[in-house]
Amino acid sequence: MKRKDYITSSQYLRDFYIKDFKYISPEVLRNKKNDNKSSGRTEACTLFVKLWLREVLKGFKQFLYEGSLHGVKYIFEPSFSYNERVTWIIIVVISISICAMNIIQLVCKWTSTPFVNVIDSLPTPIWAVPFPSVVLCPHLHIKLSFANVSKLNDMESFFASLVCPQMDERKFEREERLSVVENKMLQDFILKGSPTCSDLVKVCHWRSGYDTAWFRNDCCEKLLKPIFTEYGLCYTFNSLPLNGMTNETIAWQKTFNRISSSDPLEWDLDSGYPKVFPPKPGTLPLRVMASGEVNGLSIELYLNTSEHQYDCDGNNVGFNVLISSPTDHVYTSTILRLPMDRMTTIEVSPITYKTDTSLRALSPDQRQCFFQNERKLQYYEFYTDTNCKLDLRIRETMKHCRCVLYNWPIKVGEQLIYAYYADSEEQRQPHEGATSCYPACNDILYSTQVYYSDLIRDHNSGKANVGKSNKGEKTHINIHFYDDMFLGQHRHAQYDDYYFAGAIGGLLSLFLGFSIISVAELVYFVMLKPIHIAFKDTYYKKR
Image (tube, rainbow, N blue to C red; front, side, top):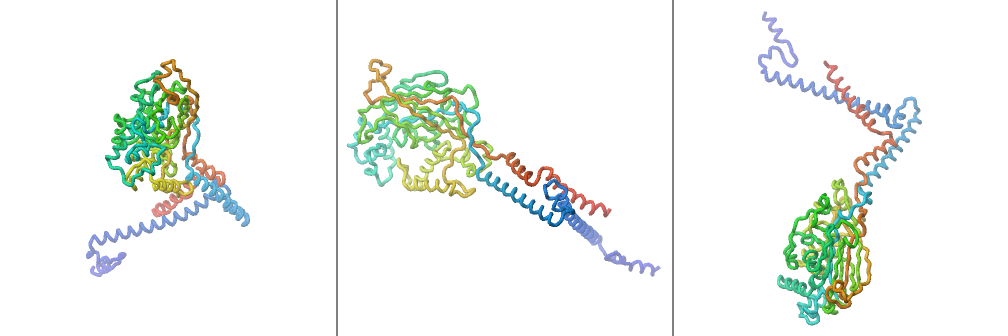
């Protein structure tokens, strides 16, 4: 009995003797069992990977031989000779190379010019766009009744040289910046020396909606607002609240227009007017329902030539007229000259630029324009390229000179020219940030045609001769839209997602016979089938 127990206890069970089991803790046995299980799992995973790789290679070869790709199966055709296989290899490689070059060219074109400008297929009515902003600047900067520019002191001569084109400002320039008190004196000098709105405007006509109203005494109160420009004190029609500038300028604006206020607008460049018809009357900026002289702006202007000073204005007599979008600033170099004793007719044609919202996914550098919420200006409420340039000039002038003058420093001009050059197509690197001002993605411009005709003065008619005037003191202007409809320009993606996928798919199908079925075959032969076979051979056969 003892011998039997000894033999039994001496038997070897894997890594242990049976007699040693009474000295082995249960934890050791469990750890040993877990090690065996993990070792078995590792072996199974290794076997699965080996089988899967083998089946992937086999499935890929089967895909090339039995799939729908053109010419590839002839490379693996066992009945073909070596020379025939090499021939088909060359043919397939050439086809793949040509297809790849075409796809690369298509992708490069898509990335370099992701959009195209086209003319709208449907015309736009003129009531969908604002009437242009009209700025009237008299060529009479300092009235003789206010001051004789040849008899001013040094400070007043400096003030006059800033607005008088005949005076050489370099003779009166100052080395020091104007103080706050002196700057207030400058504004008072220009305001008091310039003609008032009532001095210039005698009769004005603006047809609002379908009602015709002739204003005689309240033209300046209802239609025209004063504004400072590089031509001195001017008067603007159809300007936005604060002349389109931000609330930071309200204190400066109240110095020449006491009723300036920042009223909210229901219109902007991106979304346009509210989609309500008939339109709400009085919505800013103003608009008209039809074209023609009757539906435009007509103003009879008067200029007292006895107030003219040759030392200030030279031989020129008349008005400067600036026509632009209500969102653009008035400091523009594009002007029209309004002669005296003439009837000036200006026909306006709007030009709209619209951009698809799908292009918002692109960066401004790629689409080369800004939406209104993408770039905010410091001094202007609406983003346009002209507003951006002037805003940049003001900020650069404040940065380098800590002053704002009528004439900008040369340094600022040089910096702007360099910025525009660096941001040109030849100099800009791909995906490099813009340093100058791109146009607005949605914008309105106006082209003009000007016609002149003579005025016949009727001294016997009080209506035709409102206020006595001498020769060369009166002129008429009429501004209206040329046509009821116009064709704008539209910017959209050159290749949308469907077109781009179709173009690449067409090239792959043309050169290789690749299609959605080919994708399904590739997934089946290279992924699904190898996984199924490897999983079945690894786990189910062991059971």
